[in-house]
Length: 338
Image 1 (tube, rainbow, N blue to C red):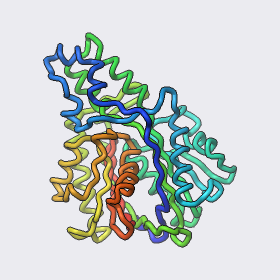
Image 2 (image 1 turned 45 degrees about the horizontal axis):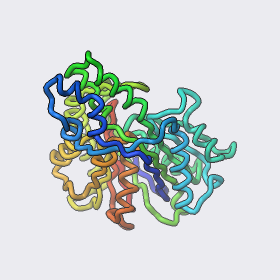
Image 3 (image 1 turned 135 degrees about the vertical axis):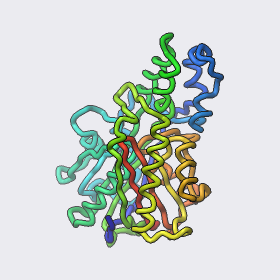
Image 4 (image 1 turned 30 degrees about the horizontal axis):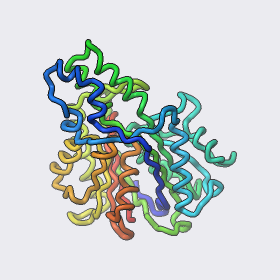
């Protein structure tokens, strides 16, 4: 899908105040690791994550998503009255219903004219939200859309720590629950606008979407537990990414040096490097946030975009590749001219 009239006007983010190290998590079930004959430092060694961030106890996803949304609007010089649609993309939810977007819209004070809804697709959810917003703008249905996401992981990780600390925990328990130990929290938002209304002209050129639904059981999660097949996700997740990227390269006319920065969802250092190595892409063109943010689900990629821009890695006029794979399996590759 190609877009001619869509821009990402601004992005805004909020990071949680509480830093939680991998060593702190591991200390909770150190006796289990010792019983299983595993040396300390397994979480950081296997994931590449030194620390992640958590919100305070009781913080709701919609609260932090609205905070990020307000920051994106402020950076764009807009008010909530300037948007006509709000899409929330978080895995974390306040309730099963209503849609978390309704809570975000309520926090922001959206009017009755602003239609809000959730778009959920695991770790590719935010890119799905950008894609849906771009379609709304490209079709002329709306002028501006606010896309939000707030991830809250404290309760799920805490429940996993209890399981791993149990005397009944086995090596399989550790393997199946390991992905939960990589999770971090955060909040991020983007304002998507009609190009002739944009002051920044960060053009969203289009997207390539691929899925492998036959792999839909590789990662399964609920409010208190996430079980995953780490090897299967590595093999088939990277496989889907390797399948999708050449399609994007052909669609957008990317040559070997066209893309200035790759902004990627980050699950583990192994997933990250394996995909780049298979495609022969330069790792130095990708900002790595995983070691200090962890896997923030659908927040991960847009947070990396925000931080890369703040660090000066992303500059006006650069060509960006936004690229994510999520459980399901799903993959989206986007072209953005910043």
